[in-house]
Amino acid sequence: MNHLLRCQRLNNRYFALRHGNSLANQQGIIVSHPQNGVPEYGLSETGQLQVIESVGTDRQLDAATLIVSSDFRRARETAEIIHRQLDSHSPLSFDQRLRERDFGELELGPDSAYAEVWQEDEINANNQLRAVESPNQVMARVSELVSDYESRYSEAAVLLVSHGDALQILQTAFAKQEASKHRRQRHMETAEIRPLLLD
Image 1 (tube, rainbow, N blue to C red):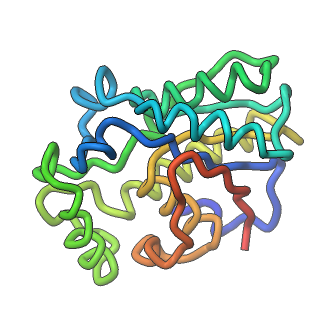
Image 2: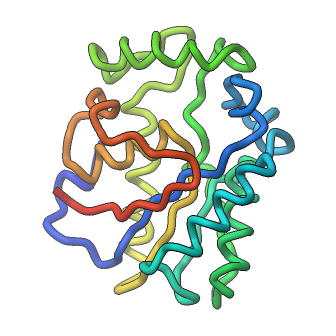
Image 3: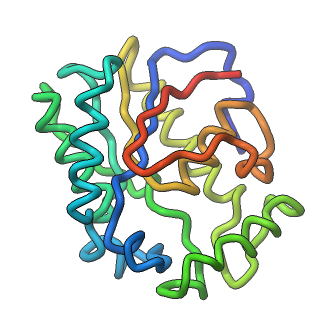
């Protein structure tokens, strides 16, 4: 359930950051299983530079920002760069609810296979084609994380470092739309920082 559907206002300000270009992006493969994504497939050199440039041009985040990241290596390395660049006052937090969407049987296959999954998502928010994690399942976990931070903090800036599909679906939750519509949200580029605003 998308708890954000019931919210009229939020206690905190939220920002999404998609990890920088990764070795998986460079190779054009899907890395969505923790046994692969947590220890391996970190940022490429391009990705590291993207993140440094992104935070250098952003004027919304500062040292007081709380940084919460997926524990996948590409997200973790992104969060570590941001943490250093901002000279953050708070320790980094890692939360499995920000992990990449699990793409099931498509793991380590070509990323061109995303299109087939997304096409089915539009029809069915419970889509589990080829054992993928459904949009509704992803929305439940990312929305739950925001709910937790709403109950724990007030007037904080919270940066959520995650992955393409997870953040597309989180944006859909903030827009108070069905999870099946996640591809209608404006695409997030690697290392892009975007405010998350309730519709």
